Image (cartoon, rainbow, N blue to C red; front, side):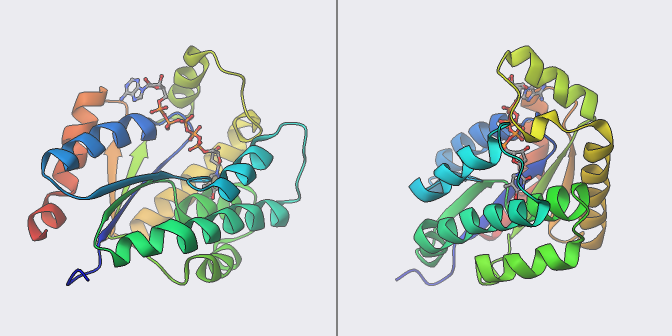
Length: 211
Ligand code: T5A
């Protein structure tokens, strides 16, 4: 049994902000330091939650905002119960692409459900698990969208939302980061990917040093 809980590092930001690219770089950097890394993504990470991922991405469905919030929370609850919480108990460093803050920003802010109600649903889903550090990749909606369009994939249901929606998401993220300066580090994701990785490692320096 390890003598301390592992670490939970989450990556947040608008669609196309470069979360996956940064997670690739961070995973390699943590492995280089011989840290026991576990890489996960939301929604997904375990079979049931990957099925929910398909549902929430489907442009042919129109879930009510409350349904949408509950679906993301249900995917999260399963990920937490099956993998995330046991990995932290086991002393691992979990690198997680999106977590509760995504629901607060997209469903609480973007859909207008409000932060309080979304936070309450997610207390149940996560049993109150909090990240040790959250890296918020800040990119303009236009840049994020350009990057995703350049990839040439079909847009999923969320990516089809209008600019007003993403502007509410952005505002909610900023409010979350301002409200919890100890946990959040905001990174300029317009920089090239190598520089974003360097900035992210700087933003993790204190917890890496503490081990
Ligand atoms: N959602 C999710 C909610 O509404 N509520 C929730 O609770 C949760 C968990 C799926 C959707 O679900 C919503 C949010 C989303 O709309 P997702 O799978 O994380 O979430 O979807 P995206 O955010 O769209 O993730 P993507 O994989 O599409 O984008 P990433 O990971 O942010 O970006 P990445 O790294 O794939 O990069 C995109 C492109 O840009 C390039 C990459 O090479 C790639 O081509 N790139 C850069 N180019 C220039 N400079 C850089 N610094 C670059 N970094 C990456």
